Length: 197
Image (cartoon, rainbow, N blue to C red; front, side):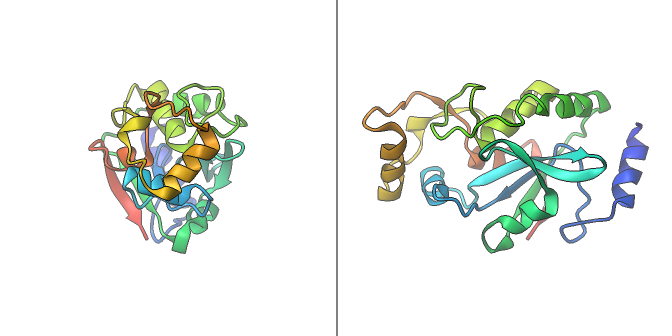
């Protein structure tokens, strides 16, 4: 399908999210209502604690997200689910090629159904939200949205963060484990904001 046809198709589908026309590869951010959300925000100094990537299934926009398990959620349902129904949607500044979009759709099948990674390990056995998006961009388009950090680079001092770390790791913190946080991708200079609420 040519780029003009893709754009026309998106327009004919109607617009969701206050005039936003979804495109494959768009990245969505919100503040999750999960039990770990506050700890993620505190450790990474970010308003947003959860993210996913927009993909199409049978002509409808979905968000592929790493929850338990990794799954597709209808776009509007995902946007409405965040705290106070607030969200930000970002898009790659350089348009995706048709080949990269095809690879993106294909590569997403590798992750669907995988368990959520509570330990934030850099493997494909289990996966967390920002890891999913980072790895899909890397495999489909060779793009590294942001540099990786290490668990020890984050602010782990707050009691809420300490509690979650104790739950997940006991006394053996993997401080050298590579990690990508939603905050790092949110601040990526490769992205621009296309919609927010």
